[in-house]
Amino acid sequence: MAEKFDGKHCSECGGDNFSAVHDEWMRRTFFFVEKGQLKMCSSCGAKFLVCQQCGNLYTRVHPALETWEVSLSCPVCNNVNPEVKAWDGTSARP
Ligand SMILES: [Zn+2]
Ligand SMILES: [Zn+2]
Image 1 (cartoon, rainbow, N blue to C red):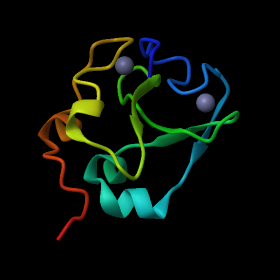
Image 2 (image 1 turned 60 degrees about the vertical axis):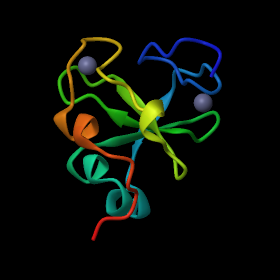
Image 3 (image 1 turned 90 degrees about the vertical axis):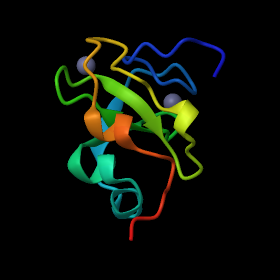
Image 4 (image 1 turned 60 degrees about the horizontal axis):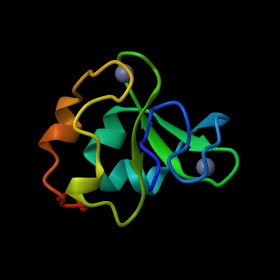
């Protein structure tokens, strides 16, 4: 991730074409995904959590996600998602 993530372009390939996806595994794994919405980059398949406030991309979500990787706030509107903020890095829910 060399480029700064701007919430409108894919952090992996720079693409700007996204479609809403449903990922059952990620919904089960990350509670902020269960409550939110996911979008997938049409070019490279990277998945992102959608900002509840402005609808742009909040942060990238992938199976090996670490706490330091998630956005502290939306890069577009600075909205703070309390579920992402509260996430402690545990991927599996009880
Ligand atoms: Zn991409
Ligand atoms: Zn936002």
